[in-house]
Image 1 (cartoon, one colour):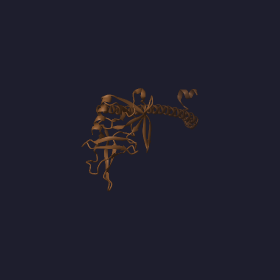
Image 2 (cartoon, one colour):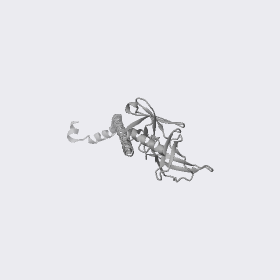
Image 3 (cartoon, helix red, strand yellow):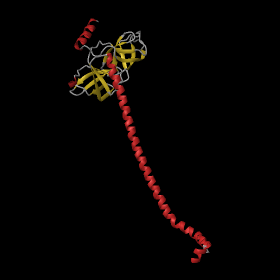
Image 4 (tube, helix red, strand yellow):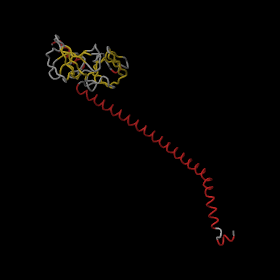
Length: 263
């Protein structure tokens, strides 16, 4: 060993032994290396999974907030349109929200969250941003029921906006259709004509949209035309409505009564 240390006589032997021992070193170190690599891989995988879970949770939260913002924006648009519609009618109005909906072939009702304590009265007109919805038929202290214009028992005095031709719009039991009654088969009506309230029924303000003529048909031998309207109000989509008070109060209603009696 001394001679080797001084003169390096055993270099070849050491190299040979190192070559022979190398596979053994690899075999001994291989399990340790595998365990270390696997451990690092598991740690990296757990870290990635935790990071993915955190990012997914964050994305879900952001999506939820975004959806909420969309809902709020849509609600704001509806409310702006709803409040804007009052320019046509009354100085006094009250916004209400729907509590329940009853849409059956022979009964079309909604329930709103305003009642007697809010000054609601029987027969009070209810509208939305598009047009007339119906009228109040029953009041509680905190809620009221509204009969929709599509109910078969409901009728609204109307006139065609283009020429002033008068008729009665009655419900069909469907939330997408009304019928015009008492129109002669030779009446000047066209598809697309806007039909508005005439104000002669003491319930609804004048000139408020009721519907648009969507179909005109004639039965052989019948002296009256069958005219179908598509309601202007969004009867199947509303979440907010407006309760109206007649402009001028009782005096205005009495004036309408006198006008009808004179005619």
